[in-house]
Amino acid sequence: MKIVRKTKSVEILNDVFKSSSNAFSVVDLIDRFKEDMNKTTIYRILDKLEQDGVVHSFLGIDGLKWYAKCHDCSSHSHFDTHPHFQCQKCGKLDCLSTNITIPSIPNREIDFAQVLLVGKCDKCIA
Image (cartoon, rainbow, N blue to C red):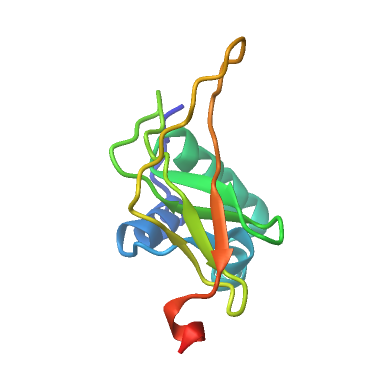
């Protein structure tokens, strides 16, 4: 599904991911843009951006949904199969630049996988 209309709201959220390599929780995005758009609009736009291969989503340690920029993905397939790291002390979440190989399992078809590594970031270790 393509984003047909490039509304101001779509541009605002799209620019967040274009200008940063950070992952953002849906709660952070709702809080950040509560003056510009309601949470239903934010969820709808994030769903469209994910369907278009602009962002990918994953779950953090608290079950909260996070979004990060995709690389070389399209509306037909997501190629961002990489682990994520979340600091259990400060909550910061990063996409790791290490690709992983999803094993093939007999009699199963795997559509996607999520790997979340949990520990302490460099700032919290210091």
